[in-house]
Image (tube, rainbow, N blue to C red; front, side):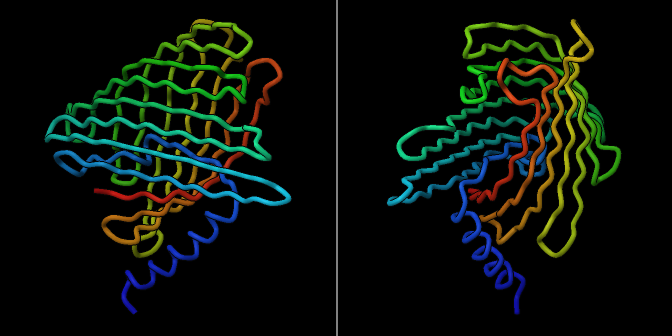
Length: 249
């Protein structure tokens, strides 16, 4: 049996899993980098499912990524959203936008700048915007290390505004575990630099990435998020998981 025949079966299994539950959409910038492709490329993914009867449910998520790479410059923009309702009441309404440009400095070091904006009102975060600059190191083919300085502005649904200067530190690992199957893991820490050292954000993300063919990739992921000083009435810790299908053009 050919490898793509096997992967088609894997894809069908995860398609069933992905449509049976309302799973969270996980966005990982490092996992989605496409540094090796020159020129322009587009990656789109998403899903919709629902039910009607005893419980009326509707779940929609959409992700779009556009890359434009040259020998020295790597640029991409990401836009994503997730919407969930149960019995005509909305309980998830998330939006995420990310713009990044990276320039190679040497064989293993690159500098980069980025802008990001996210909205998650059901977690009491009306809007979080940040802009930053930093560098990224590739000490080994399967490791990526990054550090940046960023300015954050956060508006809560309680009409409060908070500004902060943060460091953004991360480590990313990628390893082949089988033919066309990769394991990815990323850890982020974002301590505040202009206030209490207790004020920090942390994220741990891991996933299995199934490359079905040159156009279709399936990503099964889990993410743990921690906010030491969350908005009032919001939880410090969140655990989410998801199955994502990506089409590459």
